[in-house]
Image (tube, rainbow, N blue to C red):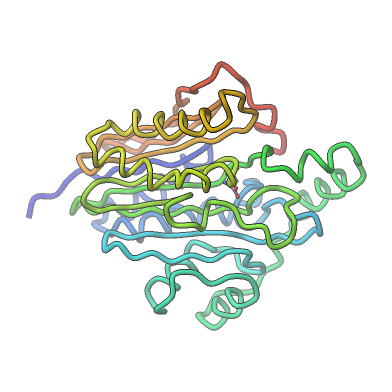
Length: 304
Ligand code: ASP
């Protein structure tokens, strides 16, 4: 059987380390699905990544809850939302996909499911994240701003092509910082934060969840690629649709990454900066995506 060169593309600076883990799986002949879940685990387990998994910023009540989705080449998906007390939300989403008849499990039920499947319970709130939360709580001005969907974080979206040429993706996040308990963003919603069609390509999102949901962002990008657009143009087209919905007046950040079935990749964002990590031809690198608007996101990096 002919093998293809594995590819991994993911969002933000921590995507670079996630790509390393994912590409290790792929180079040993592992599946794209196992690769993206291995990549997700790196960001989820790193306490310094304050947007994903352990160490993620909590909701308004000081409780960290996670959202995650996976989608494999067979067209099946699994996701969890609002799940607390377990670090590897993407791996739990994979269990939902593989070991249940369901597409999504939320809240307490998702945690109970994870513990039953052998995941260890862990307090996700690190001291560093708790201190940030206390600072936020004390500041009445920050409160209202941070509760809006304009604040963005650095969700990991990761897409891979394995040696067989099969595609898979994962998206994992602690969601919007200081979110209303129970708020769910785009990341665990198939078609919004993540979409994979093994015949066409895959896409994943980061940024203002409400906006990505409103245009079915990742699905739209895959459909754009189906109609022949390059991965990059497919991302730009989806971002333009968001901008147009607001009459050009946009104050939120969204970034997309995309991977086409022929191995072509793309990334784009509304504002600067948005970094993505690309593993291709055996090399892994971090790059800056092109932004649609000549604007700087004020929320970027604030908690790194
Ligand atoms: N998309 C994530 C959410 O809305 C957050 C982000 O990536 O900024 O939960």
